[in-house]
Amino acid sequence: MRPLRRVARSAPVARLRQAGRPIRAEDYVEDGVYVIRADLPGVDPARDIDVSVRGDTVEIKAIRRDDHKARHRAEIPYGLFRRVMTLPDEADGDTLTTRYSNGVLEVAIALPGAGRDPSPLRR
Image 1 (cartoon, rainbow, N blue to C red):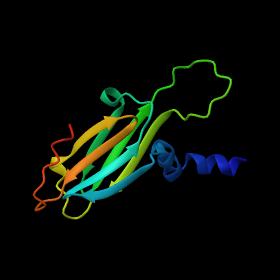
Image 2: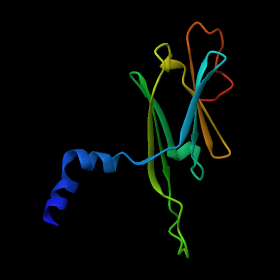
Image 3: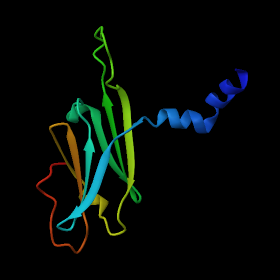
């Protein structure tokens, strides 16, 4: 049992624990816009979702908060959720916009030269 404790405290494993649970997502290009749709039901988009572009990746972080009710059964995960996706080479991270509806976060990033503005989505 002692060797397992050492492994669990090692830096790579500790970082994995901090990474959060994975977010289910899909991505596609439509009308010159790179779109990511992430499944995030049960979160407050104004308070609990953070989307950022870093280099050639977009990172989505969200927190589903537990209301600490006594439950007979608990199958819904709570806590930190995180997903990092690589952007297409031509993506312009400065154009990132988001929209949250019915538990789905939609992230849009313009692809230069496509001639379409992703403005229907709010930042």
